[in-house]
Image (tube, rainbow, N blue to C red; front, top):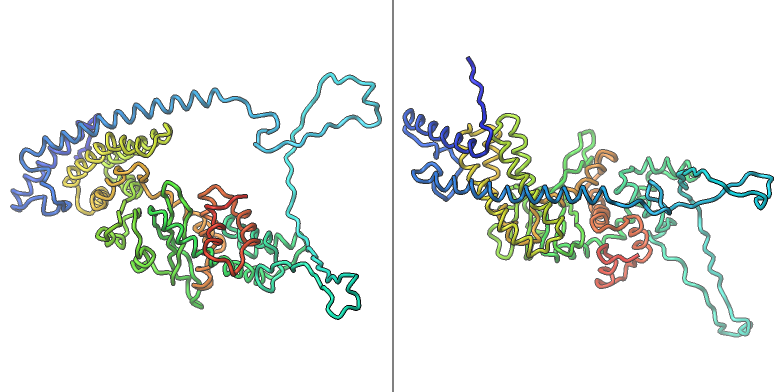
Length: 503
């Protein structure tokens, strides 16, 4: 007859059950094999949790965890109640805006064929109609007359004047900054491939080959390249970057499936962020990419558990932080096979509730650090004790054991986010910046070669930076393409970067 494992109702009882089961398993193993479960346990420098007299430290960690968790949960409940009361008491939207939050243009319509002066208005009905003006395409003909002063007529050296001819953005092309900005914004922000845009333009009366639109977009990338290099320097100057890689499809092998290349994103998440920076080099995901981009860098880097970042633990001047979200995902997956993983998920959720409480209260960086030291540190130590205890009850390859090994390998980096109030608990911000390129991959599918992917990195650098900074990407592109000149020096380029942009 199969026996069903029944879990206790309280976390404290679960801890006691785990400890007792672990002791029993270790005793049985020693009797059968003469060895210790420490032979297959996660390696760490501290003493075993199953040494004599160590149970007291485990229980002490558990009590600290439970106390800190209660404090966080109580504050979260209070915050939610206050937010609910505030939302219920909000006033109505001003009359000049309707339910869509858009400006309203009002007009009054009277019956035809009457003198309104003969009537009193005794009531009214209102109808709201949502309108949209389609895009408008036109050719602007700019004439620059050549002038000669009338008094100089017949003179051997008359004064000749002519206004400066318009600046050509992409060399001999006749595309304006507004059109180029729209093409780039449509593709890299709204994920519309060139052939779809060509179809849209045809409906407005403009027929263009898709290859021409593609050439214009790549020419715009060449124009933006000096600004792209300045953006990289600006991001690295923030001294706190999150790093992540995203796969892109490259179709440069004739008759074969697309190969997978990787683009790297470096996002400035310092207290005064300057946006993000995408980098692509032959699709490499190797350690030479971060080594090159971080050469001479001094500051904080935050990332997932990818092994190429391990070497930066020993680089003077660099502090490495881990991502709690990646750790949580593995425990969420482990819940399907082992209900004990639910405890880790619950504990981690408490840490996130603390972060929400601090944001909602408008806490300063110093206040955040103090609260993390007071509440997050005991919770983190309790989670670590729980993981080391739970690990010996698992088989080495089951999902919970894998999740615990992954978490413990990164735990020193996880703990570091409590050391400063402006550190992030996870690297979700940089992952959110990968979404536009992931959606683009599903729509325009691939780049034809590495050069095309490098141009994509330029555009995603500025599109995502504008999104991060709350700037309209299309408006920034239009203004910048109009102002940018090939002979600009570095200070002039810096003034055009998104974080310096002023409409």
